[in-house]
Amino acid sequence: MLTVPFNIPYTTKESVENVQRLVLEPVLLNQRYFSNACIKWLETVYTGYKAFLTPSATQALELLACSLEIKPGDEIIMPSFNYVGVAAAFVNHGATIVFTDIDSQTMCLEVDEVEKAITDKTKAIVVTNYNGVSYKLKTLEAICKSRNILLIEDNAQGINCMSKDQMAGTHGDFSCISFDPLKNISANEGGVLLCKEKWVDKISVHYENGTNKQAFIAGKINAYQWIDKGSRYFMSEYNAAILYPLLLQSKAILNERKQKWLALINAISTHPSISCLVDHFKNYPDHNAHIAYVKLKTFEDRNALIKSLAAAGIQSSFHYVPLHNSPAGKLYGRCAGQLIHTEKEADRLLRLPMHNYLTDDQIDYIVDELGKAL
Image 1 (cartoon, helix red, strand yellow):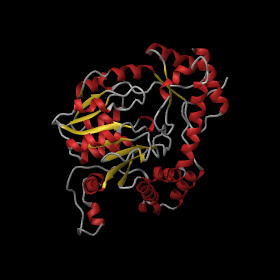
Image 2 (cartoon, helix red, strand yellow):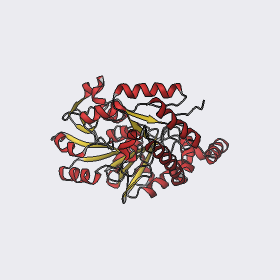
Image 3 (cartoon, one colour):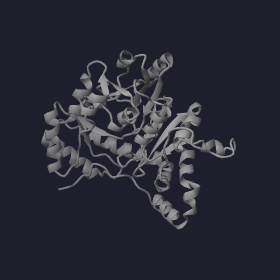
Image 4 (cartoon, helix red, strand yellow):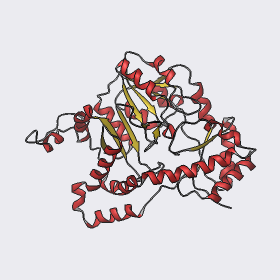
């Protein structure tokens, strides 16, 4: 029996060499050599944005919530089908989360529901680019500009993903990317906050423990001091050393992953017994192959399939449990309308193994076992 791991983070020998170099040349830790190299790459790719490397994408959003001076009474609109850290980052600063429904095909925020959720307390709208998909973000941009509301892209899954003529993560005032073990490009842990130039000075203060250290480095003041709230939000230099060569090779890494994704989804779509499981990928928008998922008819069917695949040595998983149904979601948030698609799609979505090390034999095995189970 084959075994098929759910995820294997992509690694490269250059990352190993970089970490070894840091150990042998510790002076590089003070210089933040690899962090600065990563920042330069990110700011080149994400033109018009300043990059702040962080220990995780969650902490990138916590840095943002701190910098925006979120306070009790402020409302943040976001999809309920979401990672808990996205909501918690703002709740930790007193915000109320307003949960909205998703589009059933893309699993992204349903923009048509957003305007119904906006009140005079709305501070920002957070959109999650699920599987790297930028869904109706031009429309959302226009809404935010007309209402003077901040647009934040949770682009944790969407590195290097183009949507038509625009990069995912470049629609909002801010965006974040994750480099955790499940992501296409992984430094084990890590993230980045990207912000427009007008926010750089403010973010810098909170990024540097609430000090005006960047003004001191720029020669604008004689000494820096504590002036506001903040923390030490830096990514470890060892994580940056791992990350940098992966960023340089990211196009090739993502292209290889996309080929694995296409092979798996095409094999399912041409199988007579299980092609219906991937109907949602017909006319699917541009994406970066972060997630390969199927949809069952019911919650019970989904859970039964997880057990069946596990018995065959294939790791699979559900994804987000809707936040509005959780105890903390009910305590710190409210729903804007009925979240019908959120509950239905979350209950029947099943994530399949997807990573660069997936073999043709493993793909055939997954498809065979899906056929047997169903």
